[in-house]
Length: 252
Image (cartoon, rainbow, N blue to C red; front, side, top):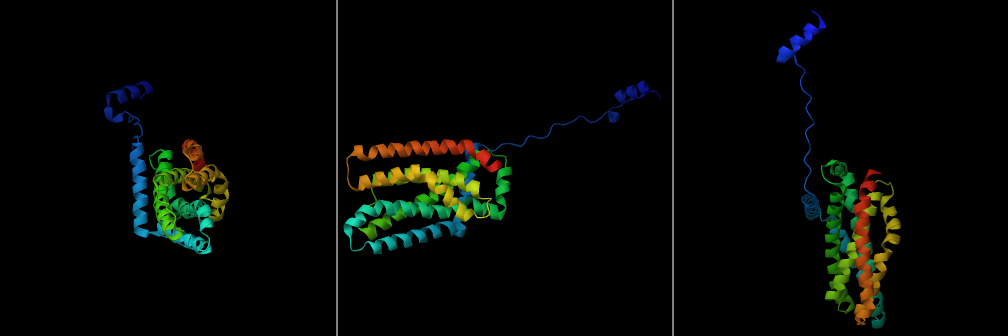
């Protein structure tokens, strides 16, 4: 049979025709904020079951405040002057405990690679982890304000101070989540994260301490409002930078 005869036979017989090439099925992409909410909910449920992260942060907070309270027991004026520093030093170091465990626990369980391969945008993973960390830090920070009020005999639960704490912890957890994702694959990640995070968090830490001190000393609005604006701008810049850089960080 000649070649032209074989081609005519193949054209007339449907079974002899080659199967058409089918396009690969498209993997549906999960809506952005649904993915963010799912990651936050997963972290909250895991923490409620284990209580590992929040318990360690609360224990560290309690011990730190008690040590400072006993050290400044005989000097009321010194307590008034240092209470803002005690607040933010405790928030930063207690937050480091949580940030260090956030992505490290995912990597140790082997679920970090699965999250990176999931059909979601990488930035959704970042915002999910960041919001989860932020909720934990907020809980510890609000309890810290109550502890300082009781042990230092200084009213810390004020709307303006709570606002400063919310803004300061927002910037801290944003840059902290980004840097913890950079150091999660390092061998000495527990020691490396504070080294890289402390210089980066200074644009948030300094205005937070200054604004808290000014509000506690009942200074006029013109004294602390510039620090609040600085804090809001720093938060915005950190969020934009983290949104733009997280893809490159996890790829590397």
